[in-house]
Image 1 (cartoon, one colour):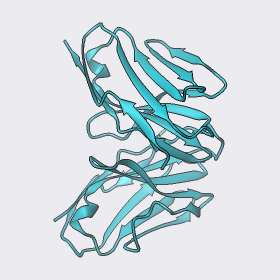
Image 2 (spheres, helix red, strand yellow; image 1 turned 135 degrees about the vertical axis):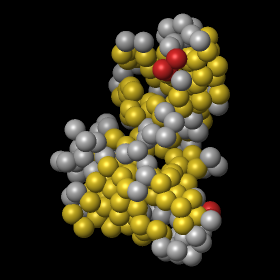
Image 3 (cartoon, chains in turn red, purple; image 1 turned 30 degrees about the vertical axis):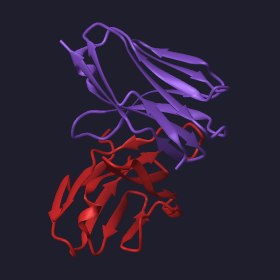
Length: 115
Length: 110
């Protein structure tokens, strides 16, 4: 299995620019999660999709962040405009379903640096 | 997210010794407790998990214990090896939501 695929792996951009992060979940998985990891706040859930529908976006920091899942095999996380405090590693994870013990499988992450 | 406290934040052990990481939580509705290992430049990978109806689970050199009454659970790694060096995260799950501890950086000295 290819696992969760994320692109790009690294992104360096200037403040004010638009950033788009991409994720391909494991085939057949119904749930998709976007996380952000920083030294200060650790791993935080940003948004959760089930069957391509956003279920919980309470972790999205502010209106500059948006996420979409147009189909079962693709999701994007967009930051517009980006700010230096958005610098972090962004992970996408997927799981087979929504059961209480469904394992979440993480991608390799996108390391974002906003200058 | 729900509060999960993880200790210690760093742990250095001699190769062959054991490592123990402890987590406490406050949400009594949590019913699933996974542990993730994160190596440098990679995403977290599940290494072991335990459900609330089980007190202990073992997988080769790794074991997890759960005390739901006291709301704490622990990861035990025996016979540590250099490849065990990584950051370990505990997590609790309530419905779909995982809340993570702050992580423990484990260094195994050869």
